[in-house]
Image 1 (cartoon, helix red, strand yellow):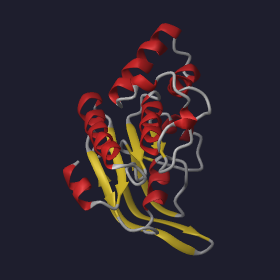
Image 2: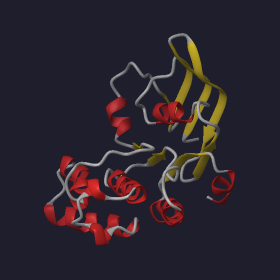
Image 3: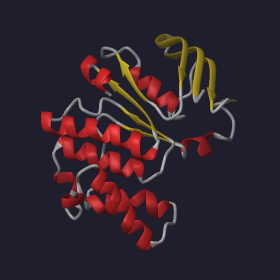
Image 4: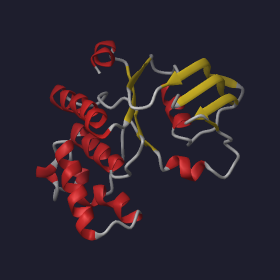
Length: 202
């Protein structure tokens, strides 16, 4: 099992915001997490991304029990990337946004250029390569944020309400992207949504 959680709780100031008896997620699948606002979906994604420690409970990733106080979190965070509901892009070009994770990983310039082109093709944003990122629509911003996340070459991509603030056209495109990420790259995709039909379809 890829992720396995048991008796997991998260509390803030004594108020429990997440209470899971058990959750098991297989590698290489697409998972939709459904629930109303305030049900703990975003909190769960932050825990799955190793960005927030649970208050109590047991957490396994790739059959290894995770200690959130230990020194292995940096390595784990390289395997998982979270795209927020309202992602923030750098106020530069679309290409530079996608290039940033590649530069951090010291990829050669020619390799970076190829990867940027391929990732922008995947999200249907190659025509916007030299556009200013801060002038994009909500749906376009979400697609560039997904491309930037994929430039980290993660094993898992977590998407928090990826179609909540986009028009119908971009919603359909993002659904296609989720399918393609999983089908062509084998990346495990976990996304939150209010939309039962969308979750069922994906």
